[in-house]
Length: 184
Image 1 (cartoon, helix red, strand yellow):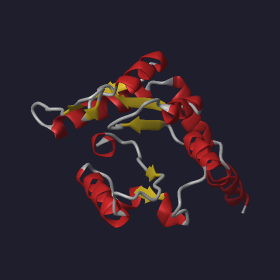
Image 2 (cartoon, one colour):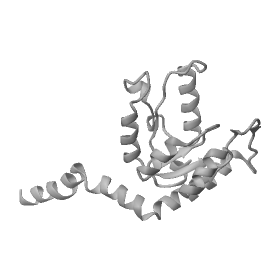
Image 3 (spheres, helix red, strand yellow):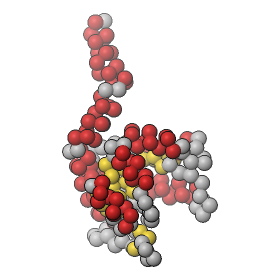
Image 4 (cartoon, helix red, strand yellow):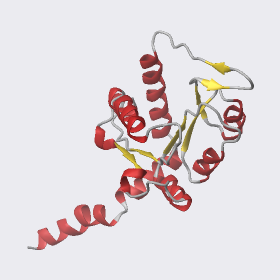
């Protein structure tokens, strides 16, 4: 939804791993379908199992991915402790967590995360969210807010500018190559 509602580019990486109770092909198909319905292009979604990591992506690589990203969304249905949320926060990501999960709500408050609500499993009972007027409208409203907050965050702005405008490709195409063409 962020991609559809803003000028921001979105790439989603799913660090998937084998699961005994879920067929991987059906899972990926369902995720891709939901992603496309929400405004992503098929190429915007990547599963690490398709990139040569069928048994799961190495933990150290996850830290590198967090360093390269700006946004971490944790719509988790159930969590006892949000370790991945802490890891994403330690790498400078804007955090969005499921307020309906007590462990994520508690941690999110401490980390000043952005809260959204998804279905959840709590202490002995499950919650089911009802969105008014619709789930799509709820997602669009929050996508716009999240994008605005990220755009206005000086740390995320600096992180993005450093990666996009102070990388070898940008320097070559925007500074060095024009100088060489000017001399020719």
